[in-house]
Image 1: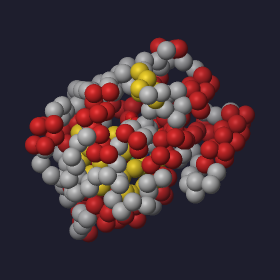
Image 2: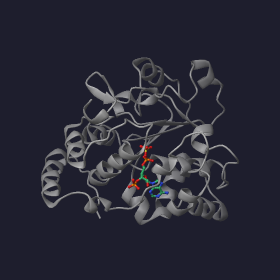
Image 3: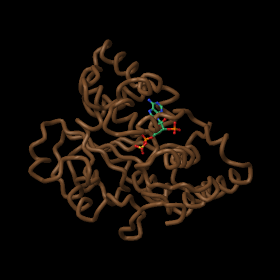
Image 4: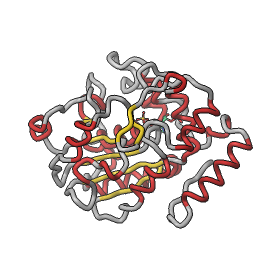
Amino acid sequence: GEFGYKYRTIDGLVLPPYVTPKRLAAAGSVITRANDICYCSFPKSGSTWLANVLYLMLHDGVEAEGDMPLRSNLHWMESSWTFPRTKAEVDAMPSPRIFKSHMPHGYALGGGPSKAPCRYIYIARNPKDVAVSYWHFESNQSWSGGYNGPWEHWLQLFVDGRVQRGSWFDHVLSWWQVKDAENMLFLKYEDLKRDFPSQLRRISNFTRHELSGEAFERVVNASSFQHMKQSRFANHGTMRGFEGFFRKGEVGSWKEQFTVAQSEAFDKLYKQRMAGSGLDFDFD
Ligand code: PPS
C-alpha cells in the first residue's frame, strides 16, 4: 500500500499480512473452557496492559521469571508466529488458558460470548489517542505494518477504516453490542487510568480470581505504566523494539498531534457513528 503499508484484506477487512484465513478459522473454532479468558481489543487500546494484569492476577501478583509473559503464557491464535499452532496444542494447554485477539466480534475466538463458555474481556480506548498511538507505533517499529507516511495521511486511513483491523468504530461497536452477555466484560482504558483498583476488582470478580490484600497490591504496583516500561516485560531479547509498546500511557496525548480542524472533523464523525449506542469515552 501507500507509504510502505503492508496488509492483507479478508472479507473487506484490512488485517496484518500474518493473519490468514486459516488462522482465523482455527481461532473461531477453538473449543473453549469455562475458565479460559479471551481478551480482545482494537490495536493500541491497552491490551498489553490488560495482558499483564491478567497474568499477574492468575499468579497472585508475582511476575514471571525470565521470558516475557506475553510470549510464554498468552496465546495469540490469529497470528502465525506465536504458538499454539495446532488444535492438539491448544487442547493440551493447561487451564486457565489466556487468549489474545485483535479481531472484531464477528471473528471472536471460540465464536463469541453467546456461543462459547469462556470469559471475554474487551478493552476500548478513546479513538483519538488510539489513532495517535497507532501512528507512533507504525512509525517506530520495523516489525509492524511498515507504514512510514505523514500523520494527516494516517488519520485519513484511520477514519476510513483502512488501517490494520479496520474501522475503530465498527470494531468497538461490534463488541459493545454483546456487552451484556453474562460471560462478557467491557473495559475502558480511561477508567483503568482514573481508578485502577476499582477496575481490578471488576476484573477479579468477573474472572472469579479472588486476590488477597497483598496480592492485590502487588498487581497494582507491577501493572503501573512506569513499572511495566522499566521491567523485563519491555526489555527481552527476542522482539526488538518492544519498548514501543510503552510510549506515554496517558489519556489526552492526541492534543499534541491533532490540529484544531482535524479534531473538529473527528468529533463530528464520532458523534455520528456513536449516536444512540450509549457508549462514550473520556478524551482528557
Ligand atoms: S498493541 O500493539 O495493539 O498490543 O498495543 P496495546 O498494548 O493495546 O496499546 C499500547 C498503548 O497502551 C499503553 N500502555 C499503558 N498505559 C497505561 N498503563 C500501562 N501499564 C500501560 N502499558 C501500555 C502504551 O503506552 C500505548 O499507548 P501510548 O499512548 O502509545 O503510550
